[in-house]
Image 1: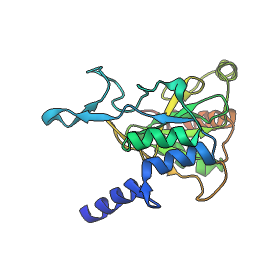
Image 2 (image 1 turned 180 degrees about the vertical axis):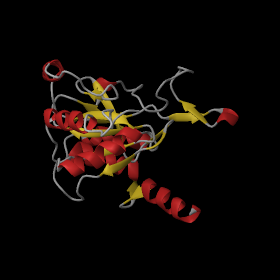
Image 3 (image 1 turned 120 degrees about the vertical axis):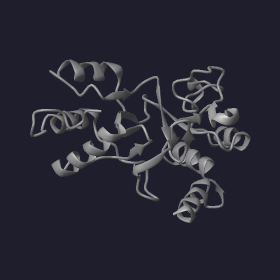
Image 4 (image 1 turned 135 degrees about the vertical axis):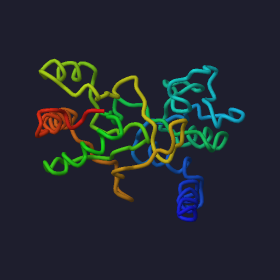
Length: 224
């Protein structure tokens, strides 16, 4: 088992002769036109493992947020992306969500796993799904804050476990690693494909609400 895990980590670190994080950032920026920027990353914390590299000793999302540069610097420019990850080859890859870039709907990891089972059973077509040890994120087509507000206003109820990553937000992408652990594709974009297809947020939220309220005991399948 240790040998298999070690081999997987080596594959995560290097793909196609280049560091995997640089390769992933370039794919997002230049092939898919997704604006990215490096996350703050982590730093050694003495005998306590690793901490966030930002100045906040109590950082709630260690390593998994923008710091320097800030979120507004997110870019699809190949030279900029190469410069960032050449200087910081282990920096997490952050997607700046919204605008023309993908948005996302996320759930706690356990609820996310249940949701995918239910959505598959319902025949719901999904786009890429990002998994971390704590949350799973379903990528969706771009939406505005106004569209999201109208969507939520029209619903009598939505699972409280849902979070929305839209304009002004960001999302950690594979194969990053932050304080909460390794990030991976639970549903990966097709290899060599063009810009990944993304479902509409309304369809995804409708399906999640239906999946959540279909528990036989009347409870929610998407609870924490």
